[in-house]
Structure formats: C-alpha cells, structure tokens
Length: 86
Image (cartoon, rainbow, N blue to C red; front, side, top):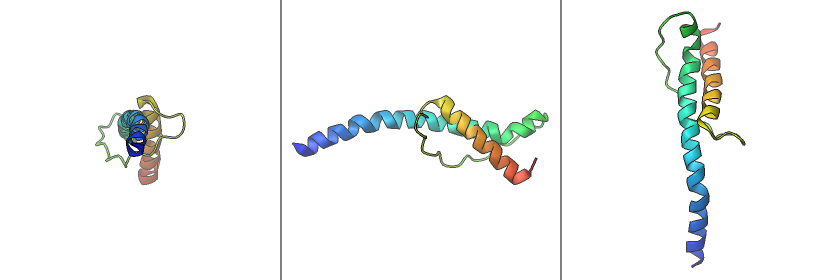
C-alpha cells in the first residue's frame, strides 16, 4: 500500500514537469536555430541550422516555450560568435 502511495505521488509531480520541460525544450531548439542563423539572416544570406545541443534543465521560473526560445536564442547566437567571430 505504501508503494502505491509513493508511486501516485511521484506520477503526480513528474507528469506536469515533463510536459512543461517538453514545451521548454521545443522552444529551446527553435530558439537555438534562430540564434545560430541570426547574423547570416541579418546579412541576407541563407543559413544551414546547426544541431542544437541537448536541452538544458529549465531554471526556476522558466517553463514556457517562449522561455526556452529566449534561452536557446542567446545560446545559439553565443555559439555562432564563438565559432565564427563577429
């Protein structure tokens, strides 16, 4: 009986976190692509999107697609600058 109780508590808190993490990661991947291609698109040059890294764990307060997109954009643009310079 105790195992069943612990399992139900675990599932109660895991499923909502997984759903928000999925949305955050989708936004992160898209944001990384946009950030990576930002400089090229600004110049009017087509860009081949880089493979985005593994989605990071969202910080406290980050849960939405927009949060992931913002964080991914910053990381993608920083990685592009590190690789190609300004």
